Length: 218
Image (cartoon, rainbow, N blue to C red; front, side):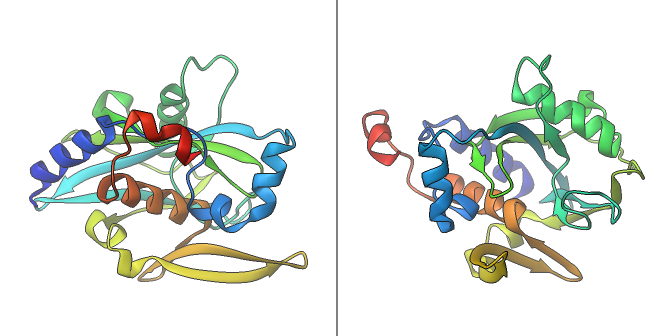
């Protein structure tokens, strides 16, 4: 598909009905304790991220960041611009746009919101709403050095190729955790970021559930 055709395809798939509740990929699907914690009423902190898509040479790319090495949480990891929902934010879209302005100086006037994915429950205690946005021509970005070490992009086609969706595992405090990873050049995309990208892949290329089937999926 050309970039324009892909934009139309993404908008169409995001507009279709989707199941509510946590998706079965990433941290939630591979960490059974998260399901138990959710059922037990564990508080998860609401957050939102912007998944920025832009066209270059008739191909869509995804804008990503590498977090600063000195941060106390997820230092040096690959992420989308985003953060915790502020109590005054009327909607996760506002959170995603505000955080993108703060972290990478992306003017919200250059973002067309296409839709959002269902919440992603992370092992670190966040319920994250991924907001998908198309960037208009002429946008510019610059890293906020206190939070972002680098801004880079990856072709969407690479990230949406299931052959690049690797499953890794490692010991974390005595518990063997499994997670998705999508190594790209010198960048190791993994964890929640990779999990949300897998959710996007499922949303775009998996079956679209009917409204009557939503309760059976959760």
